[in-house]
Structures are given as C-alpha cells and as structure tokens.
Image (cartoon, rainbow, N blue to C red; front, side, top):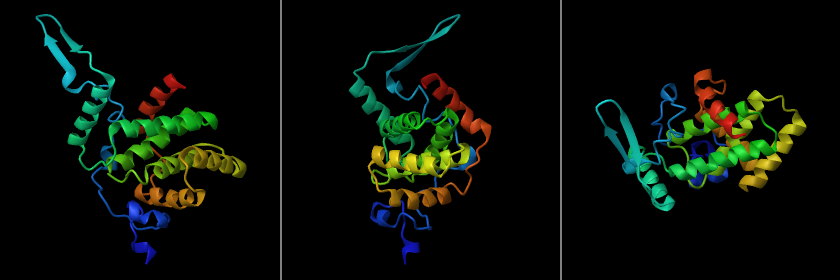
Length: 207
C-alpha cells in the first residue's frame, strides 16, 4: 500500500503524496529556536578565544581559511545534531535559494520568514535528506506564499513554474510533497510572532 511508504526516504520519493510519516522526530515544535541555525557563533567554533581582563572581556577570532572554517562549522553542527542529515552549509545554501527565488517572485519578506520557519522545523526534526531537500524547500515556500500572500490562481502557477525551474523537480512531485510537509508540520502553518520576527528582521536587512 502507498500509505505505508515513507515519503521522507529516498526510496519513497516516487510516492511523495503518501500520508504516513516515520523518521526522526527529534525536534519539538514548541522548543523551536528561530536563531539557532543563523547563530553567528557557528562559524567561529574552536577558532574563537575569549580574553577576560580586570574591567572588560573581549573575543578574538583567529584568521582561518574559508574552506577550513566551513569544514569545522559542519563538523561542530553534526556533533550537536547527529540526527540532521544535511550539513549546516547546505542548509544555509538552500535558504539562500529560497530567498533569491522569493525576490524574483516579488514575495514579501514575511512570506520568506514563514517558509524559513517551516523549513528549519523539518530540518531539526531530521526529516530532510540529500534526495528530498529541494522538494522540501520548494514546498515550504509554496505553503508560506499561500498562507501569507494574496496569490491568485495565476500567481500560484507562476510560483510553481519558478520553483520547478530553480530546484529542478517535477511539479507533480512538488504538489504531492506539499501535503507531506503539511502533515509533518502538524498543520501548524499559522506561526507565533516570536518564531517569525527574528527571520523577518534578518531578511529586511538583506532584501
């Protein structure tokens, strides 16, 4: 039965519309931290030194080659979140793609912020893999746009066209995976302000 397929497995990608979900549910939606994956401390890691003096404290970050810094950041992230299948650099790269596409489609920063929350919750639950990461990113943007924007049918079609072109997946898989993401988020698409606002503030500095 297709309902027994796990749409989050690479083997289950053909059944993207399947309703059942298994996998790592480590992340608790109630404990979601919107600053966690954007924490500027991540790239510093072991290269940061805190110097404490009599009247003040300062932080010194030694120069490191970008490639080494990226490697150390990903290793530190993997040690802290072993259930997450993607590297932190890949997660951030996907978020940049989501933002760039949203700019092209004239979506508001609040829409992108909501998509980020959906996406990061699934990341921290350990739901994403190399095989489904682009479908998940696309579905999060699509759901956020439907919830927060006044998109008409033509606008939704245009957004799906852009998502299909940017992330190189089939639109039928995207539409099926949209329901899979909705179920994984427990239908909680309307988000509290404290989850969205930190992303919104960072985005309005970048747009």
